Image (cartoon, rainbow, N blue to C red; front, side):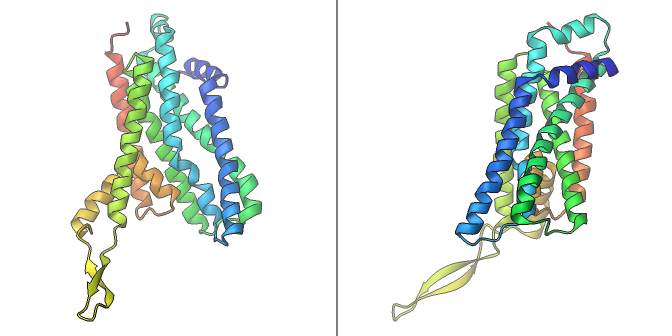
Length: 275
């Protein structure tokens, strides 16, 4: 396992897709800070450093999906995975080494954003407005969400030997999850009442609160919130917006999902026919 990890990380630091992801996160950090500062000055908006600091989690899943597709797909295309098996490496070790390397890549990309966001954002916006406990739990949620995302796409990529097809499937999957998460959050954020327009006999219009037909019942809210806490994209939206009502449940869902995906993926890879 240690040799596999060393080989993977030696390849990682030279991987162009990984380096491009690091560069993209750095550019995103600088651009996000500048854009928020311009809005703050030009429109006299109140901008918190908290919002800038956690914004990276809204995009890290897409970068992780793209990176893992190509990183693992290249191993299949070059015959590296098959050669590792031939020389006597255990399939479980190969799978877990790839997962750990991919998870580390996602965390390093996010770390690049975090460092630049702190360096540029703190002088512009000041320090955190949220309490230190809230910052720590959301940071933990973000780390676990990134690891969970890596586990899911490692599972999908390790069982698909076609690099191009794997990239297409993984990117389609992450965007479907993102669309689903946006829908869930929109339904959860729907107001209980909406303003209806009533016209009196004198032709005067007045706004009257009316029940919103799209407002969820309490039971429905529990179901929608559970899936928002379970999906990696749902977690990413809540973390980026600092709006998670159940941060500890999100952490637990991430741990369970990552463990289940890794165990199931490793077991499935042991029986996979490597062509």
